[in-house]
Image (tube, rainbow, N blue to C red; front, side):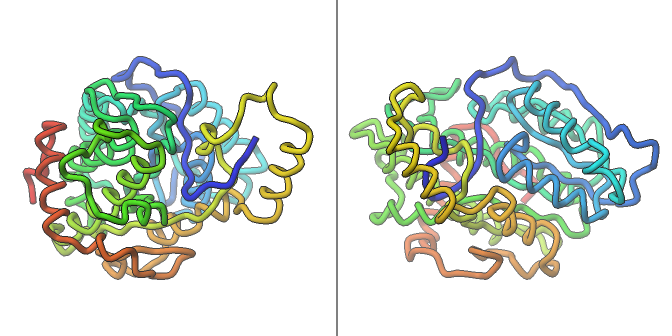
Length: 333
């Protein structure tokens, strides 16, 4: 049952074994015409899935990697994208699954190493899309981090750092990090003394911290990037996806009027996943080289985020602290 939410991405409920490298290529016998490569996290559903669909339709991409935790759901997504209705008139972009669990730093290392080994060369687009929202109680990642900051920020920090040699090898490397207007929940700025909410846990407070961390990370990366790599961040809007699963009561506890209310909200206020993916696609594919660097976008337009997103001391602290916590740093920049 969908609910209104401030950001969209998806996360499966079961954790598979990570570090397994498996792939599925397009069944088309035509060779891909495009030359670019992209990685999209959380690509098996929601806006991640729609981002892959739109990038593929452009014909610009040779390979798109679906970076997901759940292999079955990722392969189902690839199968949906390879139906005759989807492939008719489109390019023969190669769609590949690679296992990635952002709640496990070891998995991000395995993913980055596998990408560099399997593909070599350049990575043109990285869409940091996956995430979790409003987890009711304090849960931890495999490395002991609070789940929302751990998945939404630290996992993507480690992944981006691991893939940076490939991004730097591109003529136009792009990193698009999905944040949210929920970064404004962290009105007092980054909680350096309680990054994981251990003193007083709040589901929305930690979500706000993770989304502020996304913006601070994207802006700091933009300041440090070489000229051929850009880093931008975005708010996708309120979208009808699985991200809001913690906001809903169990299916057998939903009353008839709640169902009607949810349907009304969905039909009148929520974007579709395709609409929600538009800004990610815009930053990954459409905007001119370098134009988006160090900027925040909503509905494919630049927007000024909250004032604390421009705190360079917080951004530098987070950059260093993230490297210490994950053991993964941007050695090349």
